[in-house]
Image (cartoon, rainbow, N blue to C red; front, side, top):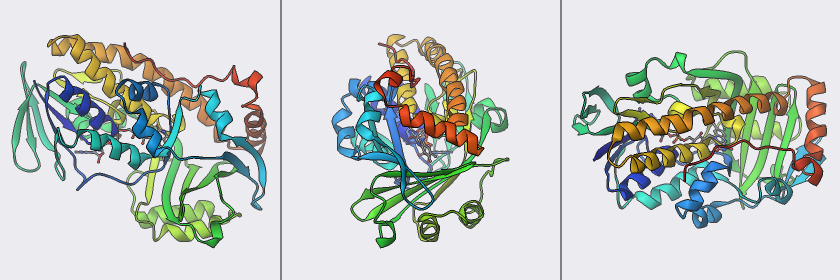
Length: 386
Ligand SMILES: Cc1cc2nc3c(=O)[nH]c(=O)nc-3n(C[C@H](O)[C@H](O)[C@H](O)COP(=O)(O)OP(=O)(O)OC[C@H]3O[C@@H](n4cnc5c(N)ncnc54)[C@H](O)[C@@H]3O)c2cc1C
């Protein structure tokens, strides 16, 4: 069986690994010029953790895990309002939790497959046609490939999805937030930031954390009435100044670093809602069809879970590819729909719009790690088939 995977991100690389092990001949195309290093600190728990355990990836994840002492909520003058010990938060997830930079996860997945799988960088699809037995794909490098299965693992703005399923507007739900993230040198201005420090105000918050001896990372999240779409870096930095220019603490110093950041990231926060992920011999995986958004805190984890489930269903269907794809859709769609809904509820709690909502959030967060409360906290993930 021949398969073409479009997009060498977290979902695409996980799927490539699993299908190649089953004997598929896998070709990947990736539009970026090389592996992408940009990213932010991610939580990793739930179904993705289960997948990592099954495929023997946990030692690699352990090696990229960032030790964090505590999660601190900061007052505008830089003093700590309250602090949660990371080990208590981790215990909420039965210690099955990592945090690492997105680029590091992509790197370890790539390391795993790079000697077995051909990845053509700077390459994308330009046309797709399918009949009952094959998908005929034209690529931007002016070659053509005929495959039994085409998978769009090309993220939230998936081109495969647009070509095979229709325009993005019908699938993308903007959640009312924008986000920015970048890294910068840990100068003396940031010496007081030693762990995961968050300053929250109604409708906007910023989190800072050291990521290595001499580097820091910043993560911004703020309410926005309308999606920004694709905007230039200059426009994005202007937007950050407009939203955060008057914020206290070390925020003015952080904003000054945005101009120099080589890994500046800015995007709308959206979910992708689709009831069908498969069309004939074309399937979608990861954010392309199931983006739960960063407010769910498990986009990468679910991307791996989706890829693993797709490979599992294809294996179980013993060569009946259409049956396997139908099973994949049946297992994943209802579960992801639930996570998306729970993420929307969590977002309105965790990213408050008023002072009184912020007060309530802080009150609940302070007690969230108490043994009696933590039994009631449910971090919804999905089940992967066994
Ligand atoms: C600020 C922020 C914080 C986040 N925090 C978390 C978190 O705490 N925990 C968590 O689990 N997740 C988090 N996420 C989400 C997570 O990064 C994604 O959900 C996850 O990486 C999905 O993986 P993917 O492979 O489906 O898509 P992507 O990672 O987007 O990969 C898609 C790949 O396809 C390529 N591509 C795109 N278009 C084409 C094309 N036309 N042709 C060829 N290639 C193409 C891209 O270059 C990319 O390499 C966060 C996201 C953001 C923005």
